[in-house]
Length: 120
Image 1 (cartoon, rainbow, N blue to C red):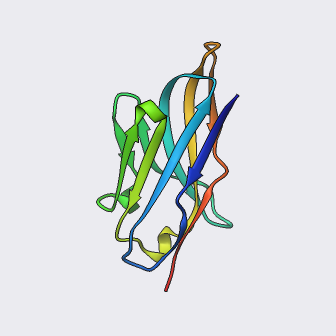
Image 2: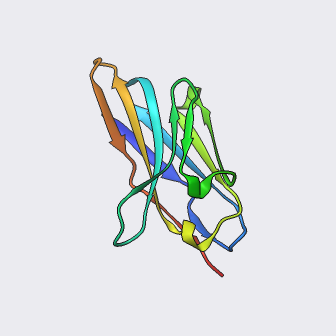
């Protein structure tokens, strides 16, 4: 069984910064892709950034130049640094992990989400 836990959300003023983390634990052999998504009520979940095992990243245009992603492979953790935050960044942020388990099966797992609110 694999667990994905996000943390670091909160309330921040426009122009401020916030860091999120996503940690995967459990029966994991290899992590292939970690993706941050966000969702606001009434809208579809949208991709924020995807990080592959070989280090490739894909950012949605809305966050390019403001968000960065890094990882600590030893801890199965990725960090999303969000700078110059805007009210439109307000959403629940979810982490999805694509992995091969220790039983060699491919799967993916979602975290429970963390709320980010950008407001005065």
